[in-house]
Image (tube, rainbow, N blue to C red; front, side):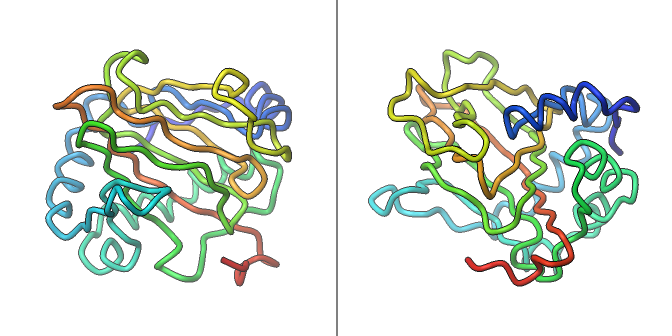
Length: 208
């Protein structure tokens, strides 16, 4: 299902320095429709969070629904080769998360103005895969992140930004790297991200 880079050295160095590393073409374009159809099938079960309750005005599909209703997504999540990639880049003893609620989630931004506010995660590693994304960085939906282990940027101008295309992925040190997603800038756009959380054996019960 995935196309995994064989050489982790350059990726490991960037991840250590930034807490983020891009994984372009993680899902090859000829396999992307299968994953996109699966998420579209599940999307009717998602709940849109009220834009009046920050920081997450968006549609979310939670881990338990995914575990109960999908065979494909959990299979990709548990892929030993993917876990090996996460370990190789992060240099952590990465393992799957025991609680299905925290294991995987789909975040869907589609109304104009949908955004995902600044936050950290309880578990240390997030591998994110895009099935849909704006075609241009000018359309918004950008990952915005601060320095690894540092405070969130004081302003948008100081934040690092990353634009991703459908099929791309990235790995984030999500417990110490503050991150957010910028709003979509015009109607008709969608940003659909499948988030896989990985942890270490001593952090299965990480505080929320």
